[in-house]
Length: 76
Image (tube, rainbow, N blue to C red; front, side):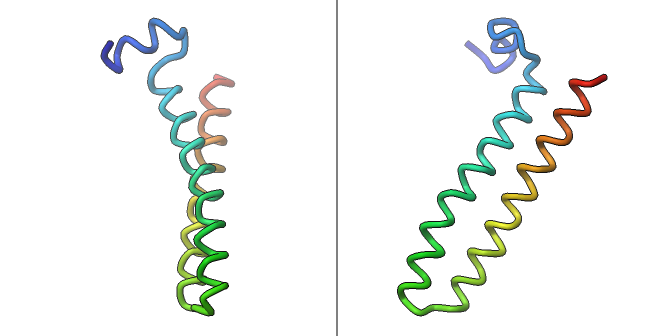
């Protein structure tokens, strides 16, 4: 099955499904980065803690942006 077939099979347009997948990947990354932050904190590496916190914030923004975009598209 190609990615173009998925929309026909699932009943959800691929472009909308891709937004859902993007938001899920961002949220999953937020959770994964929590472990990275904890590891860096335990090692006492403040620079790395801040790096992972910035990455986590970017992932949160990506998820929120994806959810907002999907909501706008589904509302129209």
